[in-house]
Image 1 (cartoon, rainbow, N blue to C red):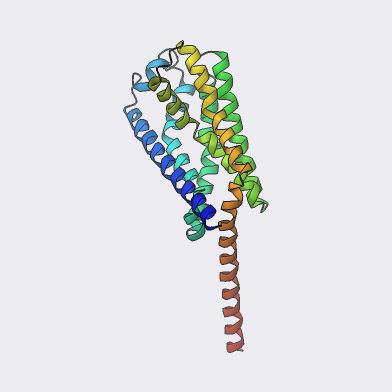
Image 2 (cartoon, rainbow, N blue to C red):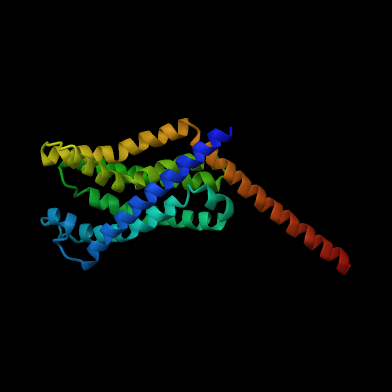
Length: 245
């Protein structure tokens, strides 16, 4: 059991650090767009639609709010934060839900309608943005009903889609490393689907391996601590009332 716990903890910490570093790199990439110029990085491929205001506004809003989602989402799966800083976990969770449902999710949907690569690629990003909003909403509803286990499962699925931006760039890097030469349209089509479908497969594997059960122990520990504190506070109030009477 100790070895299993050690391996789970090591994998959890390793995944946390890798995702944190990847998020940091993505944030650095986002800073390039603070110049608000049409010829920066990815925008060089968007010269034909840069003038379209709904797309342009959605792009900048999405780029500058995505780091909030990446960081807030990451804090949902750190066992130390869950156990020792439950308020940080809760506040980060609210930020994650609000930003995804009302800002990054809708802007991602608008951007997906103008995605490079034609209808097939656009369909991938449309599905991604809709599922992202849906999974986040289901996760929120589950925790509101007190269903912690399913909240964790749906939150994992939601965050898997959040990380699609990281995955897309990682897979594009692998294409360069292994010198995979196919047409640019075909390449982007593969990247568009693999960036989120592979993430979902990995998450479903984690769910089958009972990773949510590993995290729920810390949720239960947090809940027990909260109930204990509430009970102690109640007893103190009762003692004061007895003393005053």
